Image 1 (cartoon, rainbow, N blue to C red):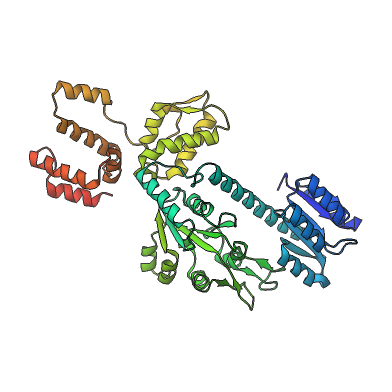
Image 2: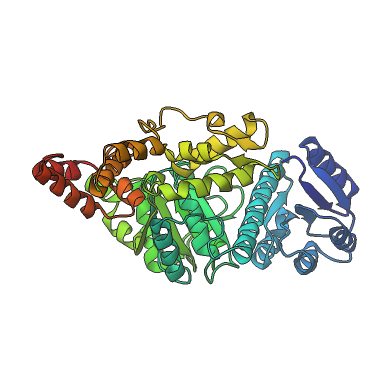
Length: 470
């Protein structure tokens, strides 16, 4: 929380000094104001990350201060402090826009926990604004990059569904950019000015995940010292991104299904439901159909989530995007310095299988920039490992010269080129067909013709090969 700043507002000098001392102990930049009027002046002059204010103050109360600050800085989280007997006032403050409240007397750690949540939400809102500006200033797809047919199809689908409220299920291998696609769907659509809130269903234990999603009331369980709004309520009007949905437990799946059916949530321990307007975008790298067959994922929930299926192909199936992404990552990590990938470096990158997809490619580029010297990034500067595909047996120039000497026909030369491409893709005909600019069926037909000439596998062997390989 270093470098974050907090404004403490309280007419009690002892309370101000105690809070200032606490905040400074935790590395925060803290200032104090003795009244609501002074607080408004400070906020106009200084950029704060949070305000910690008492409710009962002379002249103007903390509730009145909250209203004024919403006019001056609507994005500034305000946390109110109140005595136990003023809980009703605190609840009213939450209703009109306070981030949270703390009841006096409070524990020092409680203050820091609430502030940390406020800082996290503020950081997320700042990131959302950055992405919204990126969509506005560059293209309809923000940071999404690609020129392959698969990515162009993806962009076209995003255009169609961006303004829709239907649930979207994004599938793809780890590292393909599923959250980036989810953000692009949100910021390219009608909900762009509303919250986009992501949550990783794997990173949070199931017992806590329910509270994070639906919220809880005070006293709902041990440690619930105050009521808390869940992500569904925070995302009202916007989008909730459920990453790694395939890892969610069956008990919570049933509760999520009820939310999708009824469009309302019930906080943990509450006796009432809350209507919500939230678009659900979920993602997984698992095969949910296999998970359903194994009894690990509910079929009824799958069909609720999979209204609009969207698949991101792995990077190895769209090799024409590798160079484009690599140059983007160079600009991102060079921090304004002039760094350029050499043709040899680009060729070497194109020969990699990229099991970790775009995330692995970015990691390689970042390390090359960090460890390299000079403006040029050459093939030898790339920290590639076992995933690198073996180089061609000879250069293209040597192949052409040999073809001229041997007086090869065009068909024979094309066949040799197809063989070399298949070698670089390790027999992956989907990837080879994309590199060659032809469809997979064409490769099958050429194999049959070559078998008829006696210089290739038999049609049965070629068919089996096609069926066995991806």
